[in-house]
Image (tube, rainbow over all chains, first blue to last red; front, top):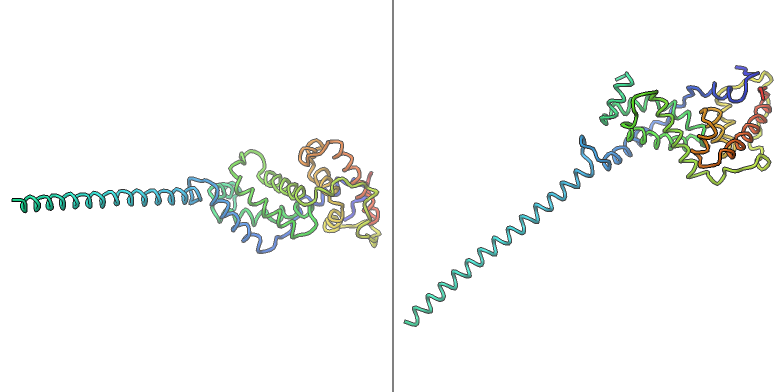
Amino acid sequence: MSMIGNNIEDIFKDNFNGFKINPSPNIWKGIRGKLWWKEFLQFSTGSINAYYVGAVIVGTLVTYSAVKYTGNKEIETVEDKLTFEEQITENTNKTKNTY
Amino acid sequence: MSDINDIIEGCRKKNKRAQQTLFENYAPVLLGICMRYVKDKSEAEDILQEGFLKIFLNINDFAGTGSFENWMKKIIVNTAITFYHRNYKHHQNVDIDDVGEGEIITSDNPEGEYNTNELLNLINSMPQGYKIIFNLYAIEGYKHREIAEMLKIDENTSKSQYARARKWMQKKLEQLNIKIEV
């Protein structure tokens, strides 16, 4: 191909128009891996991402704390009740002994 | 999935098959562009990877008007410029007199024949500061005002660097016995 007579810009523009080089076979794998991670960090309503995972973790922690807190209260109440009942029994016994 | 609109729609929905088809269809052309901005294929593939990530993550920004291929090419060129800023910026302002001959090109080309790979070798042997402006102006067809904005330099700097780059290239083409209009 001889381009005698053309100017530099034309020579380069014409030659590189549609110029192709095949990428190495591992390039797509690299893009897929990075893309998965980037998509995971980007909020999207249609797919699992870091925001949803974060929400699930926070939800689980809140539920766990709430259950734990409420559970302790119930145990406390039962213990309080027992103590109260024990006190009544004790007082009743004392009264009986006095008479 | 062969129609470009179906592929774009699939990519918008993050369909992996559509993403792979887009890559397989356009990676060779886009790598051809990357190769003109850096010194070897490994660096060009780094730009290609980064560029494709931007394409997939920002595909909803493509308005649907105009050419999708040109939209992708613009992203690839911008990625190459970012790569240049990160790795080569300090080589930008070189004077033509400071530039060595680099690889000596011998003329065994009496008819002035050449192919694209030889031109690519010529571009790759350019000093980096010349290479990027030469690519943007002579091949991509950007105006000096646009190049100045992209490279964050003065418009006159772009013009003078291009004039030097052109002179450098002209000299190399003459060594290859390729006659050109000045």
